[in-house]
Image (tube, one colour):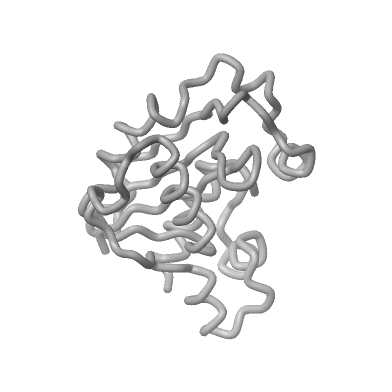
Length: 160
């Protein structure tokens, strides 16, 4: 089992304010990366702040997506990518890359990622929110913290 799990927290719509990435090689977590990302104009939707607790003051001096992208690219390029509700995280990546003049195709990853929501729904777990799946599988989680979410997703995928 060699793959990369990713989780984005967003400030507005598809503008990330944090990313967590966990690299798994042969079933073992070998790398973890997390960073705050300054969204465009450092603008936030009040609802997203309630979800993840990241405020504009936290990202005012953070790197932009374009500045963080080399770290994301080196961890995702040519990899199997896993996310919990993969369409959300994949769309955040695709749209943010496009806004920044980057091309998703250059990553050489699948158009659809592996999805732990779909995997655990097929196992009969309901509901399939990350917190529910982690509780069921006894995985520690600090929900809506990007690295914790990515790590939990990686563990769920390893236990599939």
